[in-house]
Image (cartoon, rainbow, N blue to C red; front, side, top):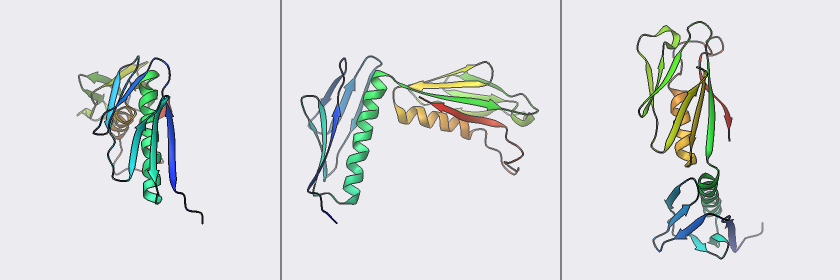
Length: 180
């Protein structure tokens, strides 16, 4: 098996986006939708600035260091995509007998009348994420940080899990339909 002496991932920064790298490893990216910053610190993996963007480099990599370099590359690309385009997750509510109602109450998402339950189910909406309910059954989760948008959508989906019933028969809930 061939040993690689260096792995480099190149991240290009598009027009209209500014990116900076501080000495302590904090990458800050500012674009038309907002700004994001994240710390990248490791003993084996380094991030360097170049003319067109960033270089994620690992010298004499082992398997875990190669994986870390690819992860950092994906994180920086997601940050660039978030400040330019943003992320949108679409969820849909399905029910067979009891019509559930959904609403946004401040920083919580509320599902009422789920399976005819009297106590509403709640889930957390993380900071920097916008949640909208339309047509009584469609939920749109948007934001610039991919991790926060995905976690908020997962919180909403998980709030309607069914316990002690057959999932093949009782399929009511809020499900992820589309990611953009």
